Picture 1 (tube, one colour):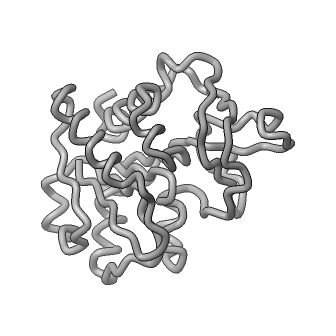
Picture 2 (cartoon, rainbow, N blue to C red):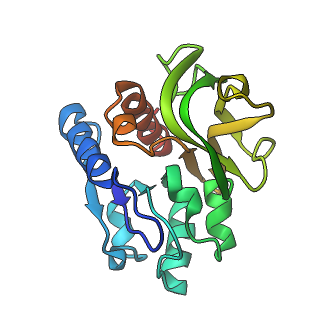
Length: 214
């Protein structure tokens, strides 16, 4: 797994925790090995051959990828590998439409930073098994420029009543991209989310699924 936490915009305080949690999961589960970096030169057609899954975790802004690097990312996933985007991965690379399609939706705003209830729409997916029908946590809940439902398979959605609202707010989803697999989860703003075993369970399941080892 190649984990990228580079930022060209807002930088989350939870990035060190995210890197530590992923390293701990790699060591404790023995399901994957991890390379965590902010060196974008790591991303190349030849460099990516060493990886099964690429994770954009808490990235932001217009990261300085060359056209060759962008092509390498698209071909990496479409050729049968995995992509995972976490939280502000959807607040990244607005000027690159192929990346937006890879994530599945583009960040719009975060109107609710509070306790909220998350509904588990699909309890059978590897990234949601064991979560139950719903769970509550403190989080910065995202909305998106357009609703991805219909393009993707939604796994989690916000219960709008729990934040005093109404509407359909998907929070995590999966999709096929060519021969590859892509997963996005809008949770992960706070360190406390990363250290939550329910979130960690989702991460492990997402890695397993995007690596085609479910």
